[in-house]
Length: 385
Ligand code: GLU
Image 1: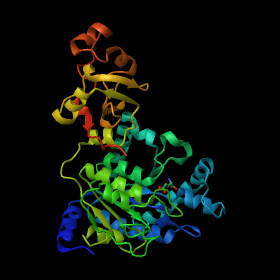
Image 2: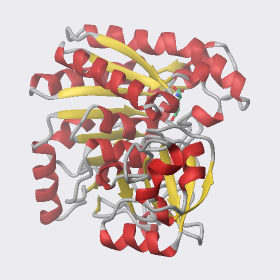
Image 3: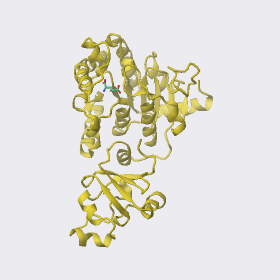
Image 4: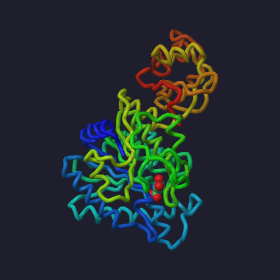
């Protein structure tokens, strides 16, 4: 597994890492009888050694639903959202307690952080969460993050902790994202269904070929499947952060990854980095509306590095405020860009198609010449998945 060049790439990427997000899936943390405290104990030992090497760790821990339904004596993971939420509420208490107890053996303290996609989509709450996390890390505490399953409905849920962990990686400015699951990493097809599946030790860029390799079927206890892991890896790679998907059931898995050993699938980050704000715009915030632009504006955005002006604006869809994230689409319906709007939906209905000199005359004031400024915009039609 892994040739000499791949190993050199691994060593370089992991040796530079100082702040890690480690996500542990339900399939790793839970078994027949609920939470697997032996695995939690083993990972806690590894985390304490990582801390001792001067690195900071944020944990994203699944397992609330899986632990809750076992605890309640049900034989299967519930299907309805209400039952999953109720099981998560039961299981979360045991989950955080198990981490607290196991990490305390190594003199480490934990903090419980429960979030929804809606929280991170709101710039102010996102920045609040970032400040809290940075205070916790400054105090040497291990944040243990999970989705706030009790309050989520479809529109505000991450749905799987792979997506959440990818966003947390951006939120805390981590430089390595380790996603522990119950298989060794990415295979060229689903190894559970195909005996001849080949392991993929290194991915340089996630495109349609790699996405097609990843199964969308989650394990019996988890929510995501390999597909959401690959998408999360792609998102963090866009921010210039490496990701390793590896088997959390193997002993010493974290230690081996950080020693640059050939463990799991490494996703190599892109050289060109998106800054934190642009990464939030592109991959964390949920768009509140759509602006349809004409061909001239589309070309100006895609090829000439321009801001979006009212003159190129056609249809305005949705109800949104200043500062909300919007999708910009061409007449063909393909996404051209995402960015922060300087105007509300009502204002844009009134100024669309006009020249910038006319804005003040129409509205009686002008926030800015641009509808979306280039600095608050990420361009490219393959941005969102
Ligand atoms: N939040 C869910 C739980 O703790 C996990 C979602 C997932 O497995 O990705 O059970």
